[in-house]
Amino acid sequence: MTLVMGIDSSTQSCKAVLVDAADGTVVDARSVPHPPGTEVDPRAWHAAVDAATEGLLERADAVAVGGQQHGMVALDEDGVPVRDALLWNDTRSAAAADDLVAEMGGPAACAERVGSVLVASFTVTKLRWLRDAEPDTAARVASVLLPHDWVSLRLSAPGTDAFTDRGDASGTGYFDAATTRWLPDLLGAALGHDASLPRLVAPAEQAAATAAGAPIGAGTGDNMAAALGLGLRTGDVLVSLGTSGVASTVSATPVADPTGVVTGFADAAGGYLPMVTTINAARILDLQAAWLGVDADGLAELALSAEPGAGGVTLSPYYGGERSPNRPRATGTWSGLTDATTRADLARAAVEALLCSAAEAIDRLVAETGREPRRVLLTGGAARSRAVRALAPGFLGREVHLPPLAEYVALGAARQAAWVLGGGDAPPAWEVDGAEVLPADDALLARCGEVRARYAALRDATTAWPPVPR
Ligand SMILES: Nc1ncnc2c1ncn2[C@@H]1O[C@H](COP(=O)(O)OP(=O)(O)O)[C@@H](O)[C@H]1O
Ligand SMILES: O=C(CO)[C@@H](O)[C@H](O)COP(=O)(O)O
Image 1 (cartoon, helix red, strand yellow):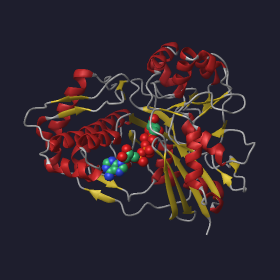
Image 2 (tube, rainbow, N blue to C red; image 1 turned 45 degrees about the vertical axis):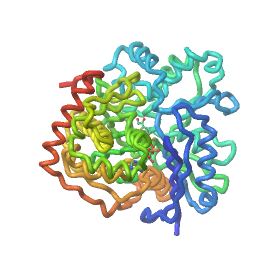
Image 3 (cartoon, rainbow, N blue to C red; image 1 turned 180 degrees about the vertical axis):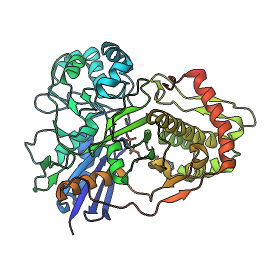
Image 4 (cartoon, rainbow, N blue to C red; image 1 turned 60 degrees about the vertical axis):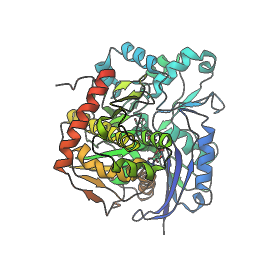
């Protein structure tokens, strides 16, 4: 049996899967946690990938890595990190993002140039922040990698030069997503001097080899890998509720949304991945469970025991600041609390807030692409919640497909590795069978409409969305 390995080096953990290259059947899997926080020593990701792949890597005939997008891994001339990496959900570079967008001629010009309007998540804004806040450290930066590039190097034979792919590169802010070319002048303008960039590797190209000689693929961003892992087709909308909340769809053509709500990423297969991302998703439920002193199942049980609408309690869940809408300094806001509010209402309001946020992400994606979804698929850690599953069709306003529980980012990376081995114009046809279909429910939908209106009113009371362009 030919075996391929896929890695998901995501925000909260590193997951490795070893699969049959013929059909994607998982033969072994492992997960190792990452340190918490939005600023992390990237060497911790090396330790995690070492632990996740120990005893598995040597069984793989090819490997590829999917990783959390955007993170700034800045290295000195010896390839040593100059400081901790700043992650996609670190909002300290919000003012730098505004400055860079202005320097590029405004949001529309920025979207035309790189495919997206820069917000604090983008790597380039973190470089500008570094230049201004830590100039001595910035002066030592000789090269800049993304998290997946850095993890790929760990698996590569010593002496390998850094490499990346079009999908992850399109989240840097110094890459033209439409034409898939680096824009080193934008990096230099942000950092204050030039720095070297990883070699761009094509979707099915071998980028490097492990010390044992197994081919390594280009890897990609975690959302691009998820699209590969699920075999997303035109018209599918993937809603992923992991650390981030994401609504994404594959597209043959690039987008350039001047409002900045939809980011116009490239994908890992030669196309594009328009996407709306929120900073706050699964952790809304983690925090709520911790406050209520229950585990994830306990929170779901409590939420399902409350009346729809949570007794009038509404949560605007921007605990970590927010990016969609772009409100990096926002905080969480509760409204409607009374002396009749119960623990169950609080649990329910947290689940409803997560799903309202996901529903708004779908709406914005549909408005920008002009395409009503053919299927909505739901994945990510929080999709394991019974409450999220039960309420999703009502809030998302459609039937919802739940693919079997699996690590689709790691599987997508494995599929890329199998593509490198097998060659050809398209990745191997692995089927994702057995999705559960949750039917749309008109009664639930009507009640969710009221909750969504309350959620939007609370959001607008503190943070207005940019208008949908017409
Ligand atoms: N049954 C569950 N109910 C709610 N949240 C869950 C459940 N299982 C896992 N999660 C949450 O999902 C998140 C991890 O999801 P994952 O998609 O792996 O994130 P990431 O890829 O961003 O690291 C964690 O915040 C975790 O607490
Ligand atoms: O910033 C984005 C997308 O633009 C995030 O989706 C990150 O890619 C992190 O992903 P998860 O760890 O939540 O999967």
